[in-house]
Image (cartoon, rainbow, N blue to C red; front, side, top):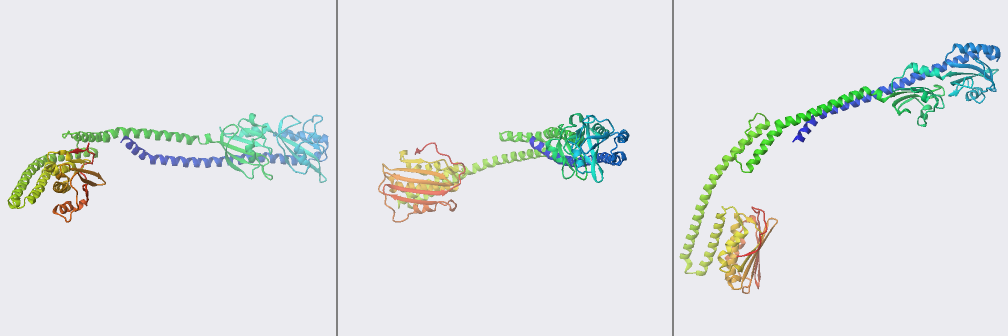
Length: 557
């Protein structure tokens, strides 16, 4: 019962839990969409910032390239002009011009001896005719610092005669990223076309100058921007918005990642509170189910069950003494009323039983008197004229009287096959009880088949005495019966008597045997007149009053 009460409490909480679960799912779905939108927006803003920086350098190189000193490759005038430009632009390390063979011509700073740039990719791209080249992470040969080089060809008479080179200071770029600010757990990454990280927040010292892992290289040159969930190199799960390098667009790869733990922290806290609230509600519900169930359900049920057990054990005075204050106590009060009614009926039944027993005894006495009177009339009527007929009739009447004694002694309700057969054969057994043998299970029969079976057995015994084995000193009779599928099968077997001949006509006994049982019994009789003795089988349908059980052993009477 406690489990059922707990189940009721759980069922009551189930809608609340389902509603909270749905709200949790909806909030997380909404927050996931928000974080993705924020990551994409942050990546766009960072890429726009980088585009402005690169576009500023592009404009700067165009202006410098248009200077006469640069166009004429006048080293003395060019040096002074480039120093003036470099001093006014804080985001570049230096600016210089190299000839078509990669050797420096002039610059904003003194060029170390023997330095050449012909092997640099950005130089080759500019000499190949590209108007503006953004290189990759490079260790500058001029200043020995990390820079992002940019280059532009100096075209004279339609052909590139030199290359104007500058470079963004990566420490300046890193400071710009830091100035934008990155929330705890979030990250911003800027990388070149080769996937080398130029600036990163947080942990720039760990990642700047390293190459993006192969698993993320596909994002650098993706076909279009996007948002994905990744586990970053620092082990943080993030929602990452990225802007890939595009030939006519972004010259650098930019990504902005939002920490899922930080982004979902408010929802996680709300989830924790909800879970604790649900757990508290479940605990309170279980306590209520336990105490309230004990007080208002289990205790009354236990009282009712205890009273029923005591009453079943024989304590007829057992009562719950409950008042119908609620449904369960109303059940107890109703049980008390029922037990009072049953007790009243028991007393009435006991009185009626006493009266019935008295009437049965009176009936038995009157029936026996009636049999005695009939027997006296028969003796006076044809006892002297036809002694054989009288003795046959008297035997049948005696068997019927014995059977009535048996039925009436059992209150006309039940008799076993053994008792019916033994009573019917009692007058024919004589002093030698071993001549008749009985064997079969104990089957209790109702009165409507006990009497017909008694008459059939008496008739068989009478015939056996007159014509069969019981009329001979060495003759014996065996009566065996079995029970199965609501059918009783009784087999009468005679041995040791005179040679048996089939009868030429049916006598009264044969007709009695065939018609003794009621129609509902579906009785079937099959005689077998064997020379060594009659074998007679009778079968009929009967629903026993008590379950059939095997008699402990066969007995003779």
